[in-house]
Length: 601
Figure 1 (cartoon, one colour):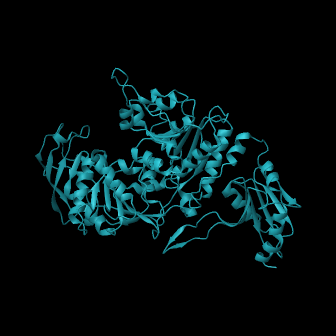
Figure 2: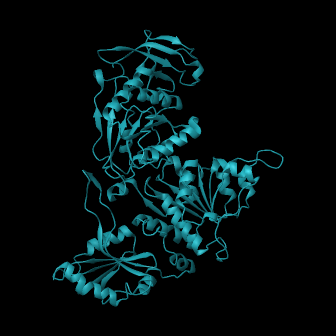
Figure 3: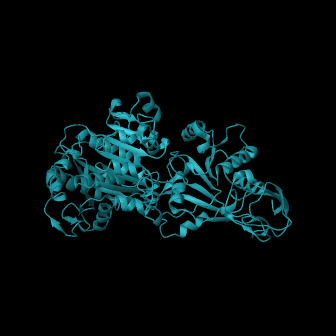
């Protein structure tokens, strides 16, 4: 009897006898695809993790059953059963050949033979020894699947369950750490859906619908979330924006799910026209549940004014969402929320096939450092403090303290020759002025005839920049193809078809580095990997023990032209250097220009 026959003739009847697939709310998922398999190129993937059976009851995965053909030992599948149960965070798992049934309790480590499979209610009670009314109420609300088109990935289901369990246990501060591109907004939506439908509130009396706040630090994040919550009744959703407050003369209070940004809540005026944060118009216990998106960026920081918002609404259960594991630079976030109830890393996302792998190309030029000599003449501006022969300017100084236009033009030429110019790209620059210059350099040498091929998206670009970003995010549109930016696009760009990320400024923070790499990790048809073009030695972050996602291949260096080092060995051409200021200051009005800085083009 082969495995298929063993399942059909022995295992399936045994599960049916235990009322699986018979009791309302119970389901047997056969050939359950846990992962998609890591992308390997040419449209191929590595082997998927597929469980023979997953037993689900009341919307929760409760057990894995690993089947082997009848002539193999009944414990032959134990290793796989444990692997899959660990992956799915289920407590019980089984190995069987159709005759013997071997049970493992992943929590206690107990294992041994049982005579039959437990029924759905028995397995529920085995998993949850302590019954809870709210667990039952949450379980009675199925995920919103938009007619079957919206399915939760396994780790998203775990994150939702872990958060709901924390709420059930009375925890007030909850943290989820999931890599960029893994669907944190989907998780927030499903949590809000269950709370809304079950009528959970701080009072735990089911007397009304909860009031839920989604709090971000950028309008694009709040807008993306608002649009993702469209399954809610229209009158339940409220976008809190300055124009709405001005029009109504007060903050909106009628609704169930509210969306805003910290900056809107920090702005406002009292009756006498004096500055007064608008969040103070709500009672402290107005919101039952608050989701803080990208919470590592200031909301939980003790020194941030935004922390006042969270302190004011302290009665609410607060859920922090972040893509960054604990570091010294975001330790305050973890101190405020506590340890994450669930972590899903970049490495896991790539290996499971839910995120796109990446390659790195390190690019060095002969003017990665610049040493001032008396031959280099100041031709524009004034310098505060004397520049002396031998003064060295390194990567962090370029485009902030010193500017050499030919150097930037050469770097642009290098990556424009290396990329497919029809593929979407993000270029991270040192400042908004630098992003402007790089935009122009790209458009000067592009092969496209479209004037909007490359655009800048920074804070200074306002509504026009936001419109360019929305168009860039539309996968059906090819223009604009390249965006230049400084800080603005390191987060909040949900564009699935980004193929190239170009780093033209140092990235000193591991948190920011992960966020930037995360811009390219989203899946898109025909996208087997994306490439990071690294002019600033950011690849050194891969040596950090906190980094959890290696490139698909080792970094590929591009040899320096003209020999290497700060000054080229031969074939020098004259370039002009704009020394913007002494390293202590950088007022553009005082940028001086230095000429005769040697540079090999």
